[in-house]
Length: 161
Image (cartoon, helix red, strand yellow):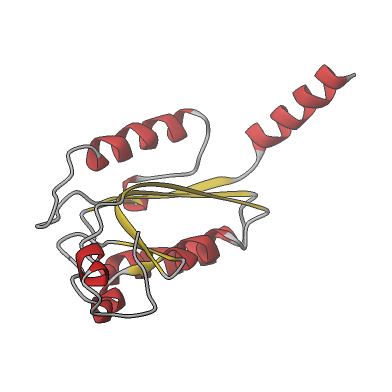
């Protein structure tokens, strides 16, 4: 019985409308990354093979903040009609005061005001939440350029990881 239930659920998910947005950023002056663009390409191929409705326009490489935010907003609209909405990010990320941020390409953060140039992880989560099942995968390197700022006591009451 259990096997039958798993089989029925699997068939149902295979036939479900599945969409994805993939973002890979590697172009950072403070710590360039080598894997994100290759990772995005590999995940793109795998998702296509398992029936995701995904095209090259759903793949962002070395995207700016405005391109990331626009893609997430558009994805949120598309997710309303999907059963499964998957967002994948590969690049740099930081956590400040228990809030997570993803770095757009060619940006850095050396002081708290620079956080406005990043993309809040909550925006990623919200973009997939209108689907029946939202999946967020974050493969973020956390070489945080703000750590020294906070460790030097320049910004009391905050912390960065």
